[in-house]
Length: 82
Image (cartoon, rainbow, N blue to C red; front, side):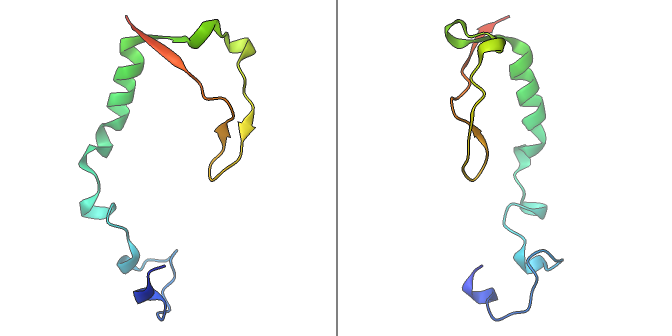
């Protein structure tokens, strides 16, 4: 928490608008509404294949822990135009 808020009794989970980050409210990224459309276009426009002849049955689905849960081995998919 920034030093300017250390002496105050604000709750970070509450409704204190002084703590809202710059990416919320009016100043939120304008492109965030387009992400679903862009992702759907990418998925629909290409035929996706797994790299090196990997089949869904023999994919390595082991996980590694960090700040977020990730695959131990990254998934690599190759796009080809439909």
